[in-house]
Length: 254
Image (cartoon, rainbow, N blue to C red; front, side, top):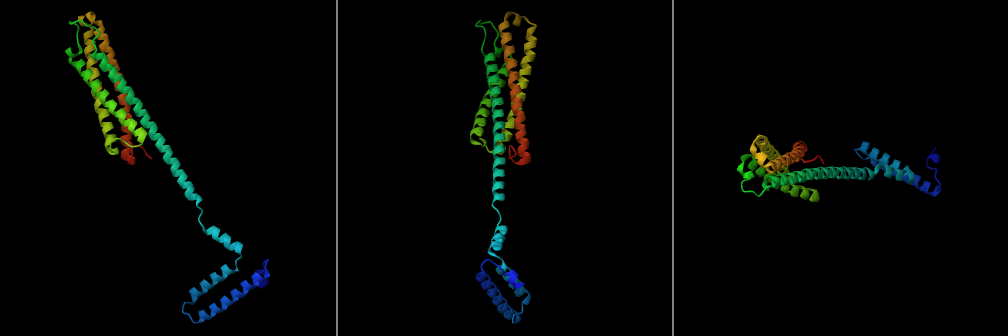
């Protein structure tokens, strides 16, 4: 039976291994009789003999099985990198969409201000925008929204190019959302007041004698409503960023 256990391709190596194992067993048995911790010594002897009686191929396989493979860590790193890349791309698309809306709000507000400011006729007795409180309100609101949209466009370009907000993130998301709300309602109120005055003027001789002025004010008010629409869309996206920041601690869940 012992011959079958220690049978190997190299008989000399097998005999030396067997002799060494027997010597180790005999020396360990002597030390076991004089030691008080016989149980732990017996366990260590059994483990040593088991390792010695294994073939080199078995010991190599055992070491390979006990060594953790680095592939799970590499896969986790790649998965995290992929997840971060996708999140950054989503954030960039969101910022690009916000930039487009702010650009549209800026263009319509500037156009509304220009149409309200420029007098279509050079006659001295023709009406002017500053003769009417509602039209002054329309011009002021569109000018404020145009300046604000220009600033927000710069902040969006900065965030798209650098990946960080112009202001600290918590200030930026609340600044955008709060000002979007305030200026959107301001522009809506101004255009509503202008619309009421323009409708009142339609039934008077002022629009009959100065039709170009009335048409131009109507165009200015319509452009102001278009600016309000895109500012409202920007406000929805800035509100989404605020909600995301409250829930996830970031303007977009990364």
